[in-house]
Amino acid sequence: MTRPILVTAAASLALGALLLMFTPFLREFTTLHIAGEWLALGAGLIGALASASVASSRAAVFSLVVILCLGSLIEAFVIALPALGNLVPNPVSYINMAEQQVFLGCVFAGPFMLAGGVLGVLIGAWLRKRL
Image (tube, rainbow, N blue to C red; front, top):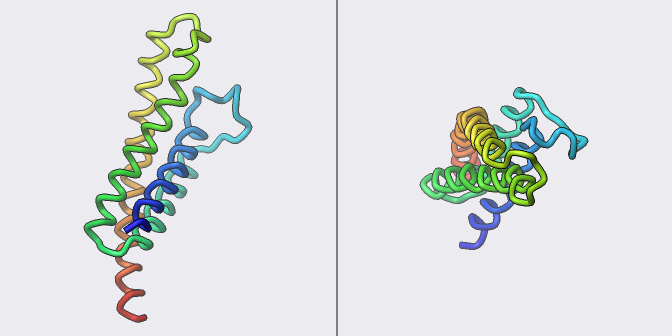
């Protein structure tokens, strides 16, 4: 029972890190920046590995939805930190632009993560049948 929870937590942190490296908001603060194709590849790998390691297909689908939600929540919180600490001149417009970036990250990463999740479910079922 703890394995899906640990997999979901680890994959959420990985997706949150990918989304933070993709967003242009933190380019002055981070040294790693990725383009859209690396985000798509990384999200697909996260989805495939997470769903292959969870035992049932239903739990894998639920886990993928939770991973996307938690990863986006991590990205939103980290992006909003400069506005919450009054480090930007206009916090309201900064938060609005940050919300748009979180939405774009979900739109760009979500389909690839779910496609990787379907592939991971198929690979996991094939491996369970063979072993």
